[in-house]
Image 1 (spheres, one colour):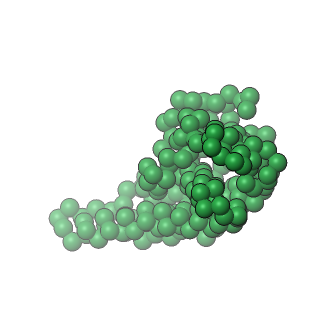
Image 2 (cartoon, helix red, strand yellow):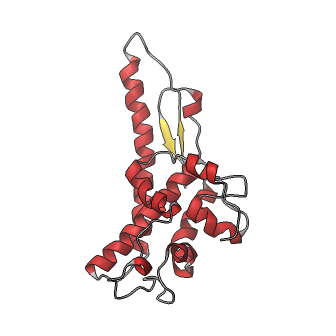
Image 3 (cartoon, rainbow, N blue to C red):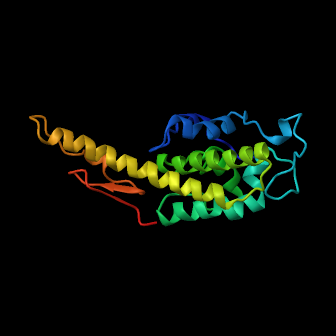
Length: 200
């Protein structure tokens, strides 16, 4: 892609909700260090498992029409429905998926970064699993897994605050959840740690 990437912001971006392991695939992708079929000398079929038209490369995984339409677009629609910012121009979508880039000077927020990181983790796991076990590639499997993982990670965030609040409540150091931790797009947490996930 020929767009300007704001690298300083890309490297500073810390996704919310998720674990370091969840971020690993996306991190390798940003470093251009993800092991894909076109890098594997021993791989018999170096073509993309989704479209079978082009060689599987890091860039192709972000640009493949099959993967984009059936996998990334539903996730981007979820972000839009949750009022999270995505690029307005479809031409900017590749660099958004690869790096979280919104514009020459902006990257996505921490919640969107969590969705992108989980998306890459689940997609890559499906590709590797299919190649290792010689299974037929099914784009619905990583999509369902990604949505399930996102739901569980965001719920765990709410539960974490609930546990924290209950532990503090019956002590002399009783506290309320600070405002800066309350209002996000994917979850709302009350002062008393009651929480509600975004209906999307």
